[in-house]
Length: 261
Image 1 (cartoon, rainbow, N blue to C red):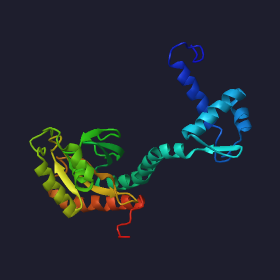
Image 2 (image 1 turned 180 degrees about the horizontal axis):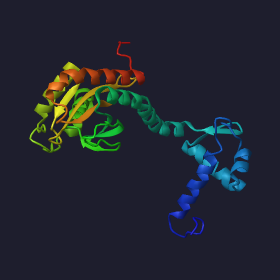
Image 3 (image 1 turned 90 degrees about the horizontal axis):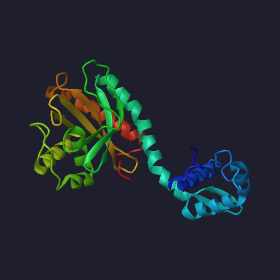
Image 4 (image 1 turned 90 degrees about the vertical axis):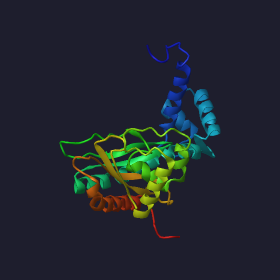
């Protein structure tokens, strides 16, 4: 059954959204400021319907009006910015992850924080046969593993996110107190990177370092994930600086300037 023939309650909003989409499709780099008549002609919508929708879109910030011409509204640009920045970060960081993977042989990941959790948004997987899977979209708690220590060390809101929550104990090595995590955060800030072994899974380790954006705020945690049968605590002195250097390169790619203004 077509949308127009559907009598269900959701059909009307769907029809309106389709018409709004048709109107937005009239704006392009080549023709950024069409007139109402041009929008009516391109969409094929009835004049009264198109005019009413365009007026509503101006009122809601989807469009701006300048004389008899319209352009994409500043409100719509503002709403789209977070998604655009996210795509830009992944695009800029991905080559650095690939280089880190090639240099170390281990899976390289980039994490962002959401509350008390961290999510992989970009990954360059190891080519080793023996591996632990790291997948885009994978969500993990920030109190276990090296990436989480980076958030706790450099993001003031991260500690607040886990305060008052139960710190799940995944293995015997999982930190289960804020005092322990505070100590690990201080150590992370002192050396510029974090290392953890067996905190979430007994056979998985990680080394991570902070990535900063152009405003100087933490953009995410970049690092390696690996099976502990291949990488152990004795390798941290060798790999930690390599990870920190890759994180610095990612920060530079995002426009970070470590020099004070």
